[in-house]
Image (cartoon, rainbow, N blue to C red):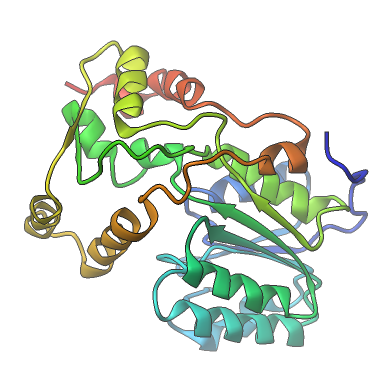
Length: 285
């Protein structure tokens, strides 16, 4: 159970959810609205719009907000992230924002540099530190590989404690709506260390189809991405993650979900069974 008693924040909103249409953001928006909390989506398509590359619109998005969930796109590892987070924190402070919740990256020194900016902001803060999501295989870059039945990636037998986006959203919503989460770093993992071969085995069991993992050379993988028309920033990010993060540094479990929510995290096999019942994988050849 959590070490600190949790009680609902009486006036939890309004909340700005940056990346409010992404994997974690849309889940957070749905949960906040379900609690009746005034919620503003921060995206380029929203009104007011929020674009990390156009600070001119930030003031309108931040105006009147009590708290902000920060998901930086494409990743806090990119060189521009620190300056953007610093500028956002300054604007948020000027608008009287009380609490910042930052989605950060496990084992990423550049992400931790952005964490320090948030931690030194003078506002309440909560860090949710995560790495590879279960949803990378259903909503992200690896979905086409799952559908093909062959997960071909440039990685060996490194084990990763894949975390579910629903668990990340639950932790973030708890931080935004309950007392007792200020100045906490929640490093969140799933309950099991898994290789990508383990992932393929769980996917095969859940879908009833043949799904295998094949290790391929990095040059072949990234050349394939370029030929498929993947943007340069996506290729750079995947190269960074495979080369600098998926090297064994995160091969351990943490208790972030348990500490924040008082329950264990979702296992990958449960995620796979749930997703197998949706159209995402059901109609794959």
